[in-house]
Length: 254
Image 1 (tube, rainbow, N blue to C red):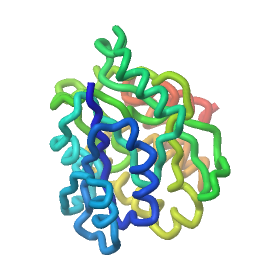
Image 2 (cartoon, one colour; image 1 turned 60 degrees about the vertical axis):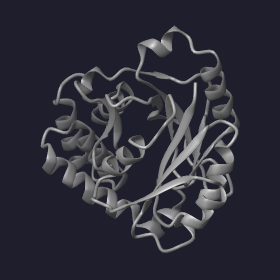
Image 3 (cartoon, rainbow, N blue to C red; image 1 turned 90 degrees about the horizontal axis):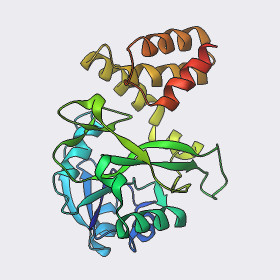
Image 4 (cartoon, one colour; image 1 turned 90 degrees about the vertical axis):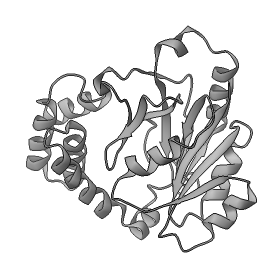
């Protein structure tokens, strides 16, 4: 089985090379979509590592950008890791073992969740490892990203039927982008809130968008607003949220 790394980048010269080094013994190819707004040496670094690149115009949607990379992938399976992330040794082990010994579960699921640990630039852990959305999944036109931000892979004919399991072991991925200076420089919070509002304009019953708005409100100490968004998200019905997110919202309301 072959594996394609699919990722996107906007001015990622600070982080890109370390990502590519972390996956080079695992992936068979890397497909990198470079945001047309990029002004640094991202493309030069990609060329040094013989990465397949293309340029895209940003359309206020991470799902659209990521789906363009999926359309260009040649591997049997796809791994999605961002430039400000690293595949850890445990992730390398788990993915290699999975690809070498595909078992019955691979025939029953669309993809696999991973454990991600947030750290600062020195590797100090910022929070306990959390389950990610599916980062390893079959290369199939039936699987595509949904959502302008906090996008998730979904089974296109019937998104609620998407089936993902947990990858063995972990943590698998290190994320540096939550470090305070990085978030501030990239204005991530402002960007994400704007895109969440657009998600709700696209679909007023988007439980995922409501869930993240609840989490942002709680982080701001605005518990009334957090509870309002949490109740709305939970009222959207079953299979609209991952079980861990549903539990998180239920605990928030309790």
